[in-house]
Image: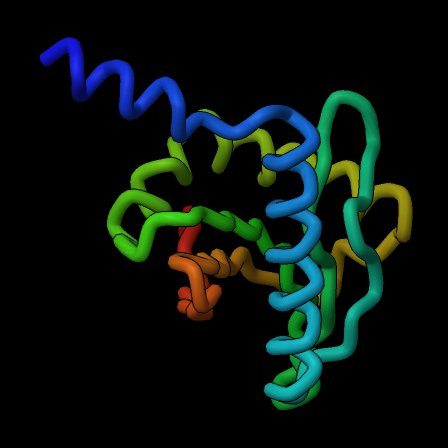
Length: 133
C-alpha cells in the first residue's frame, strides 16, 4: 500500500507540467475540430469566474458549440469522462449563458461537447451534445 501511494505521489505532475499538457491537449482538440468542419471562434474564453476551453461553430448545422477539453496521460477515457463532473457542467452552462449575453446571440442553436485526449499518443475522443436540459 505504501509503495502504491509513493508511486502515485511521484507520478503527480507539477503545475507547469499540467498546464503544458492541457495546452497541448487544447491545441490537438482545435486541430481535430478544424479537420472535422468546425470554425474556432474562441480559445480559453473567460468571463470571471467562468472559462470555456473552446467555442466553435459546427459548419454542418451552424450550431454554436461550447467544448470542454480533458487531457490525461492515462489511456482510459472513462477516467476523463468521470472528471467532467456535474459541478463542471454547471460552470460551463453558466459561462455559455454569459457568452450568449455578451455576443447577443441567444437565438443561435448551441450545444455542449466534450473532447477527451488520452494516453501517451494523445488519442482524441469527441463526445457531442453531452449536456442536455
